[in-house]
Image (cartoon, rainbow, N blue to C red):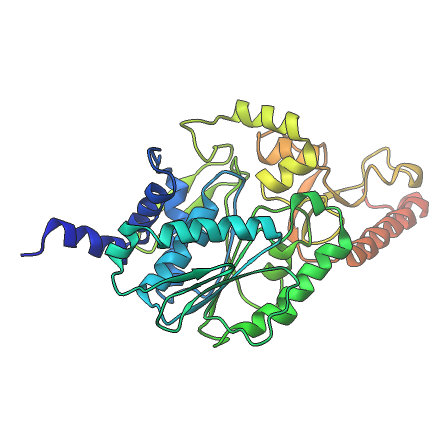
Length: 368
């Protein structure tokens, strides 16, 4: 008969949610982990990566939601524990973050409890690497670092662009180009190798948006701090989790009123991107549009108010999508669009010209 201890060890080896709880206990001794519903979603998708059902995954969630614990630290530790021959590449946007994540990984994987779960591991830890003794391990690098000669079965990218650099167009493009040109080529097997991106949105055209609309097919898990649409999450065990528009991620400690206070503190741009994971209104990248049809008082002089395609201001997007306020008069969603800023501008100009022509036409030719 299997002992209770052996049963627990077997559970940690095979159940990602159980291992996440174990990892939290090692990294945060004495603290209680409150298991919120959305943690099931992240853990379920990470489990799919570990077991080879998913090989391209993006996790977008606000700060302080345990996304790094689950989709970076627990993922790497469990991935290597299950197969210590695997090679992992951990990429961050700043050396300080890289050092912190490696410090936490060494603490987790070097613990007595971890070694009791995976007794075959013979870890050698030095600097930016952890070697398993079976040919595998994890190597930490920062964005832009030379990767020649280093392959990987799993690539984990955590916060590649700091929010403080959100306005830096050149740096944002450098990050995107480096990942596509260098990192994707590091996978030992392009088809079976996995890549996971863990980040809060910081702008339109950041790495998350770049990969989502790129040639690779990524599954995206987007978890705004307050639901901007009705959400339905189907887990691998068939369980269905539903969140209604306007509901917060963690109702035990949060509320729409607290989210409104947070919005007031951090401002429109930061709240929309980092907390709602929405880049509406950004100067590049996917955006939402409003179409405002020509009203009865439309003239070419006020065409900026009626009769064109316009990016919805952050303030109105937040009020409508997160807090249920009605849209501006005559406005309706056209939905997400992958158009570039140049393509969007051409469409807007063409539409404005069309309406100007209608305005200047004889009355009998105008639509009623």
